[in-house]
Length: 190
Image (cartoon, rainbow, N blue to C red; front, top):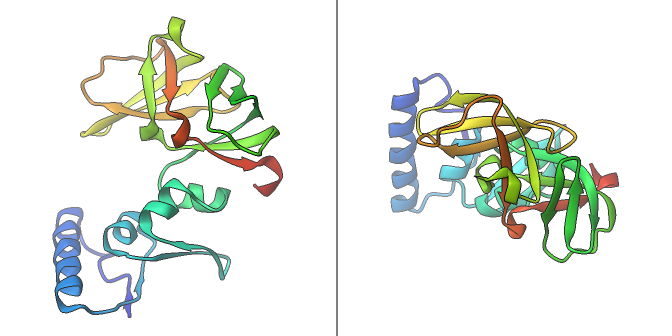
């Protein structure tokens, strides 16, 4: 049982020790329960992740499953950054305040919640996009930039883009998302 073993370390040392711990556990074939609030640690070290909410299991699964197919809104927002958008699903589209996105075939019709990860959204020309909004802020994070885009949905949408993209607050942008990257939940399941 490893209970938050890397919590008090600086970022660089934590990253090195996480890699070393991962190597040791896998080389030695040791089964361990690793307790952490750091989602990056859980994703990097876990074969199976158990997400807890108020003392109950919210979801169990492989890191990719937890991240890309969260069971509910809590899991989506707890594991990584997530845009939770209210819209209307029907005829292969999700209609939002600022336009429409194509979605995969689903049984969810009518009011719906959509979960989209910031890195799954691409910036395109506004005039050719099914969904558009205005950049309200740009935060340089080093390996990427995080944009806040308003007017496209009921709430501000976070978009992670390459650090080389030249965009500024006030720019009108289009948003494109591949349909498989949009996870729908019936509105009542939030």
